[in-house]
Length: 444
Image 1 (cartoon, helix red, strand yellow):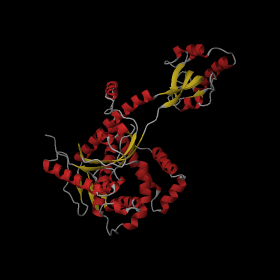
Image 2: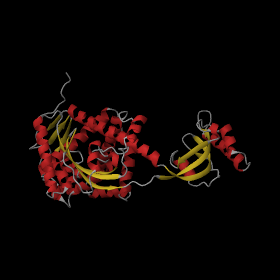
Image 3: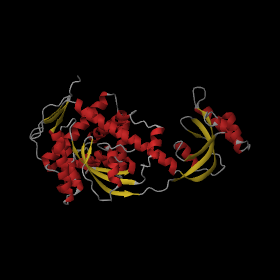
């Protein structure tokens, strides 16, 4: 899935956790750790909340005025921790696992993104009071949640050709990209008229503050109940039709810097800011026309034998000047292309994976590659030619597919989270924000 808006990006969160410990000195000392929330069979401790709040304080060290009052910030962060805890627990309960190798790769990506080695990353963590194992545990949870998200929407975001045809025929598929921020004034499930009226009034009040000069990011941090509130409600750059469907008509008529009136949606009232927009250029790609011959590696033919057979075939073509297509028809074990003389048609360089792309990048027209291996077996390839092709039409169709898929997936996961929260036992014990235990309502 291309642009599902997840509550946290694990690399960004990991880096935040790393740097956030610098802000611990800004937190009040705790003489005794205590439970601030009970989440099913688990608990969240004051020390965990303090560390997470320290992360936020560090992120906004240069602009602390953007943050809400401390009690509001504590409640916002605690809600995020509760949702993270619920998602991690559900992932584990449903059999999702993250291997040490997966975590190793994540650590490596964090180091690469910060242009340091893993050893340098470990040293930096140590200097800031965080050991590598705690950091790895944080990353493991983030990966678990990502995989839970993928599983939760699997099968619920399928897109049919007829859906694509309808979207394209409607002429509503817009080109270009937009950068958005949003504020959500949330509503509980089954909100009554008084709750809806109160939320509408609060949304109008927030809009008035923005119109009066309040920074949108500050307003989002202080008033939004969305998962991305502490990121200023930033939705980032998206293709135009990847924005939530409810925002599409608003954004179309807005100019960069514009802020919408509050818009009622399924989860509450939204205020949307168009940060910027940019045009989408013509989609011209280099396409390759090639033939190939495959000798499979299987229970009857090991890798060494397959390689020898493909080397012999290449020798007959290059040195014996036999016809590539004729030999492909007779010898290739690719059922999709053998009958056509190994013809693969025209395709972009990355269509058949890295091993094919590597060969294409080095071949001249008419040249036959050296034998190379893929997951299927051993190949040789002959480049027939290249061309520059406008694939705007195909790309537009793929864009339509992505738009529909992402909208379905985003709604499916939002519904999943709401159900997950409603089914959980949650008791908030944070001083000043205590709540009665919340449990799912039994089905009649």
